[in-house]
Image (cartoon, rainbow, N blue to C red; front, top):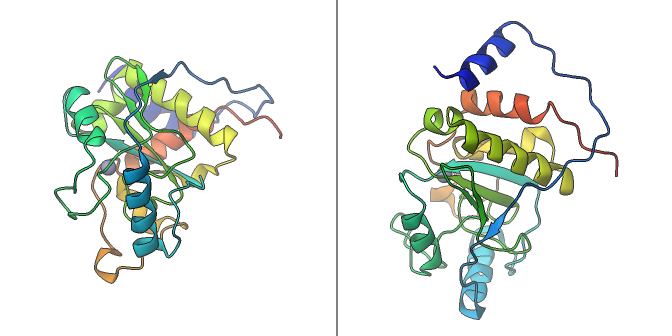
Length: 218
Ligand SMILES: [Zn+2]
């Protein structure tokens, strides 16, 4: 158990009271742009996907939720390649290809792959409302115990949460997607489809840290 997780565990088990909310501004962390090609073909495919799954023919994102993921890779390179390739995914065999808005490397470097104005396919049932954050890694524990990576992740999520006025309960792990209040899916066989990354126990710790910095009043 590393210092980061140990500290979280002690804080939670002892009824640790987070610092009082302040009006401090929440700064955007450093972000490197690594844009994937979100061209007219991909925009058209995304709008068609949104129509099939959500009943709204649009590729424009309406941010209400942040979904945290990990990549099941040890490096960022294969993730950039997979997200850039606008080819049918291996699981649901649909277009456009999968992507997420951000990718956080094990070094703590945050990459942005697409603008926050457009949808990416990363979470069934939530792609019309969810900003996707991927972490290079192989497990919840691996992400949560990498100090540089989890620090960058918390900073990014705090900034997004405040910028878009996203409620704490709407910062979720992929494994929590089906129980999100914004989850909806027109295709019956996909209504319970989810993945196991970022479990509820992990996200309870994650959210408790995010909550320690309040958003300034609008
Ligand atoms: Zn995921």
